[in-house]
Image (cartoon, rainbow over all chains, first blue to last red; front, side):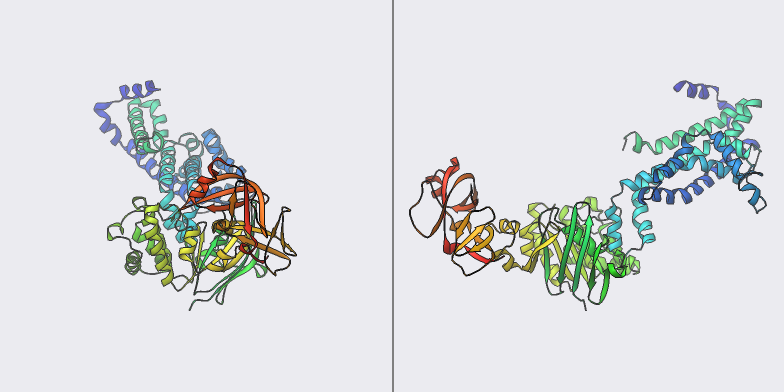
Length: 241
Length: 353
């Protein structure tokens, strides 16, 4: 497992890494990746937290089916997800043919498309962690808040959210890291247009054809981010306080 | 001005079938007692609005909190009700002060105002100034319970519900906490209901006892009445008394198990017979005498209670006797074996069942 990492570090153009990362292409890819992954995280938070709430708290027929659907993108090959998104939002897609003329549409091959593709793939990480946090939460804290006169939204904001904070933060970190590294769905649904949809992973893939040094330098960036996330979450998984 | 509580609560929850009618006025503290699993906590949760009724109606003064037939159910946050939960349930991410301020903030008070009032309440329940800024994890069980009480009282409820407020408190801190609780309950204008399984707590805190067993009220009355005229084996045991249930037949109380006790009463029909363990005398051989209830049994357990020995006698009926340690030694009761129990007819307190 270590060999690919060592290979990457050995191949890294350490002397020129600064100039590799500040080249216009690299800067575009870094900027775009940051914008899109944070955008995907925002989308995942807006839709994922309520979804996690429903999965953890509501009882209705088909809940396990809904959970399976939510988790599906975790096991689905990302490229299939990309094809799925195309078949919905593409020019001749299920919805795309109707809303394609709306402002901001069509989505494929746009920055918004990248965000959608990343959110699709990465949201399950957020939902699963948040749902687990909600399930572990002692319901009596919310009941106590209710008896103290807190209305549902106030209760959620002042009691539920702070108490599931660690789970939510871990889920958000995973979700963001997954969105940052997303390749398959992005390239399928949004392509690899420099400055518009060429994020770090697609830039690395494209760079390997012509300038491997640049690709390796960008890979080092993603590796560093992955390690940083791992270190930030170490308390949760490795049992280190 | 706070109004009285009128509750008729029907809840089915798992194997529990709760069906309880209960009234309480603001000038008394009511203890709801009973064995574990009897439905006491469910009753309290229903009054707080945390459990929906399947049947019944709950009113507080002129406010209707629940009315199943008219589909009225006020959610917990809209009821003038505060709860001290078992185990405190303080918000772990807030300081003691902010826990107490929470209810005031939820009801729209400004932060500074809420904190000032919260700090007053913490002083009233006797939480030291050093602990005002502490998180619940840094507080002892007794301190946490003080904060929980302050948090409930700060909202100035019309109905105050306490669920086992003194359980999980170590014996050393219990007496002091019980006194504080008693004072604070006495000073509150709310209808006050304390759920407990501890008879000592009930007697220390309440003016009236409501006994709930298996989802039903088995007895409801002033402390003295309940403990001197128990109507269930649980209450009798709690009071340390022998209770027999049966039916009067002439001068005999015929028990459910078939045995009969000779009594001196003019009660007719179903009746209870109450015998203080001290009124039971024990003998190793069949005693001489007349007009007494005498029967054979087996001494099955002996333990010291204060300066007396309590002896369990298995027989028909089984009974608990209290004898002096000297008598216990003379009769070698610790060894067990056959004994004769006698009770004078006049020592059996009979009242209608």
